Image (cartoon, rainbow, N blue to C red; front, side, top):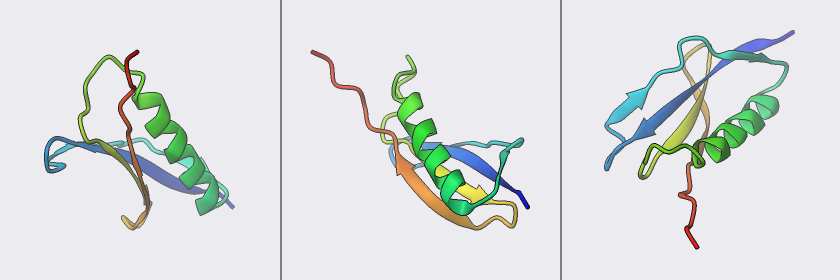
Length: 77
């Protein structure tokens, strides 16, 4: 049985901006959703947009946050 999880992005100095994932994705376990959230956070850091101190919040269909992943800035050489 799969469950739907959502991957919201909080950014701004105090996380005051929220990009809401209205669609979500289905996963068989929370662990799979958590792993995906970590990949999303890693992928976001390569975007041209400066998310500052952004975080990806992994939320289940009931609205419970199950994980949070920091978006670490890419260091320039």
